[in-house]
Length: 230
Image 1 (spheres, rainbow, N blue to C red):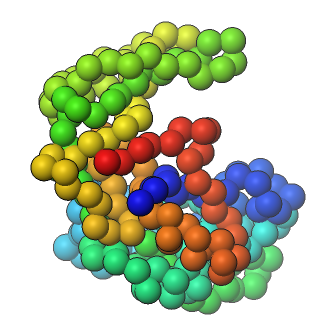
Image 2: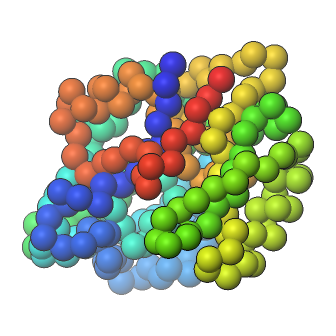
């Protein structure tokens, strides 16, 4: 089955630019430094507390879409109840939804949640037989070069080394083709490969369901970077 990385839309999200929400409203006794604020949720594990997010305030020119991009939220995806209902029909296993408020032009929009997925397949990756590419920007175009990676440790070491480089040098390391050990294949319709990429992937059939349901505010394989799985 084909898989695609899931992203917030950058087009057809209203008259304003990405992201749609840049502000947040919180209850008077709440602060972003609270231990249960959403910033304390890790991307690769469920928290042992009920995360507090508050209300995301959309810019006046933004459209109210099914996926809402936000400058405040760095983990998971803010999505509508319609998205939650579609996903419920597929094999999702380890995902949770957290309450989040949405306000646009003083009007509250109910039934929005933050989707948090921790279905990670990193431990199943066959690094030696997978393909990774280091990338850089050359003449305003992203170019890549395949590099051999033998383990998660080697991947992380090179990843951190490239991050220190300046613009124009090799600055990132991305998976191009991920092969799993023992001919394993992803069994969930939404998953991650945490520690290799911060992207969330969905199956072709879930993408088709989103398209049939006319889900808005979403895009796939941003910047033309597609990851093959085998």
